[in-house]
Image 1: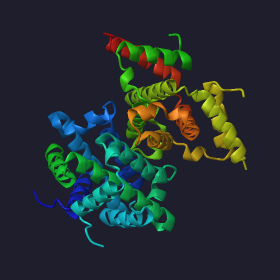
Image 2: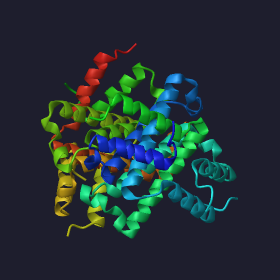
Image 3: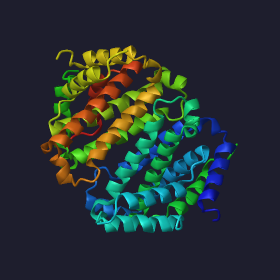
Image 4: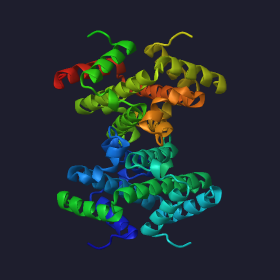
Length: 107
Length: 107
Length: 107
Length: 107
């Protein structure tokens, strides 16, 4: 397994979509909606669990697989969204952390 | 700006949360909910736009900033969620892409 | 079919949940999460459609059934959420419309 | 305060939108997205609360107002969505409850 870095994954996702002629569907608006739908599928796994049960979700093989699968889907749409709009997600997060460290100094 | 790789960002997010004693709030259930809330804030930017307008969202400085900011928030909660559950998001996505390439061969 | 008014539906939903001993799961937090998950399932139906296609979604019997089913799920969780917190949803909306009519006078 | 029934509220929402010439924006796709965004704003109120804290959310006047306001927003978009697609939300829910009572008999 190679190309696990962000840029490599983005390239593979773009090739996958292009081969299936999905680009017309991949507007930023649609990709944002798809991202939120996948995030909700992650929430669904936890919706009736107590906080304590939610912390043990990886102990069950089926739940663990479901969680990992939904994480992949969320990341897939986030990366495709960033790709079509030219946003660098790691740079965006690094900048945000720096802003937050200035705005909310640790007690 | 250093530590922009995934593991570095996860460490900075963990330190930020620990310094503010937020760990008790960061259950997988709560982090999944927070992730979905941030994904919806991304959707909100696009909700009344046409597909064409949505493709030009980065041309306006304010919208571009809002988009970048929400991408950072989505990624922040995704990485924190993965951290507390021990999920490797890049590995999860790489595995999913491989599965999809087998299941849905390109036409 | 009787009891289709809001109060009647809320009573039937409460009886349904009580008979299955689901009350402990029906915290306001969990019901809000479930509501948002169902709202996302509604979004999912439309996520790759153009605005024009989305306007014709009831012409296909399968899509029409899916839409109606998700509307039912969203309303079910909204009513159960309101029931456990003692919120009157119709009164809340009427009050909001009045506030909006004052705040945003028609041009 | 009159017209608090569902049909009356739908008429007032439709008049409000028409007076501001919002109809072109109110595609089923956009209204479903707006509904999910409002549902997430409801989730946001609860995202860091324990189950116990979430049950006491109406005791604080500010939280109570926020909850009521978001309930109104969710219901507003649900009713507008149903209006543009010709779905009767109460009938949809009554039918679903009947189906569920058959499919999942009480123990």
